[in-house]
Image (tube, one colour):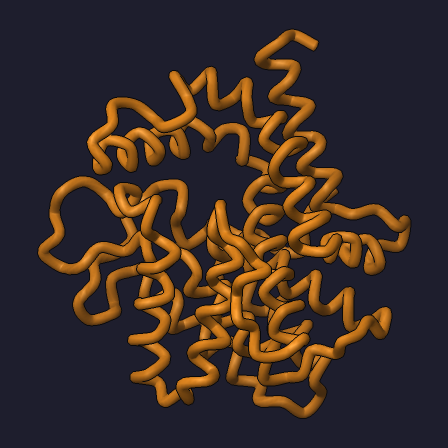
Length: 281
């Protein structure tokens, strides 16, 4: 089972997202999706004034593209079964901006030469909101639009209390929950997710060191992270997407001719691989 685009290729992901966008909102600006993707690419490649290129090796541009592709697919599948509330065009656009910017909190200011952006793991959600507000203000977005983007970004926080987020509308709430869902599923379904766990562990170690701790909070080694990841999927991610995010992930099945959810199937395959490699079963 394969996903709709190679998430190593920003142009391929942008093309799929534009296809979804124009399918849902015929007659919309054909240049909008390439334009907002270019903003995100500029941010991650060091072409945004005042910031260095991303140097966090797990939370990189591809990680953002993984979530973006999943989000666009989910919202299109949901719309095509006439789910309510309907997500209007502007809220869809703001949601795309939110996921494209949701990990800009890992970017370092120019002059910040100590370590990588992974050191900001614990504060990256707030930093992402601040980055998004600054960028979108410069792009001419209205304060209420910027607040909507920030509300959606806050859904990606590991310990976020989503019931306390002041969503401006039911559609914005759906998009926030879809974004939180896609952020989790997009990365865990990646074909190289298991192989990248050592890189994620290194980020956790750096984040812990930045906070004055030795080692990675919650894990004693890469092997420990690998052993615990299937449990993380079963005891954290599944309850999160089912309860907090109201089971929106289920809409991903409605676009599959066999009724399968490609993201869930790929994640299960990754978890099965981890179990085999860590327990022999």
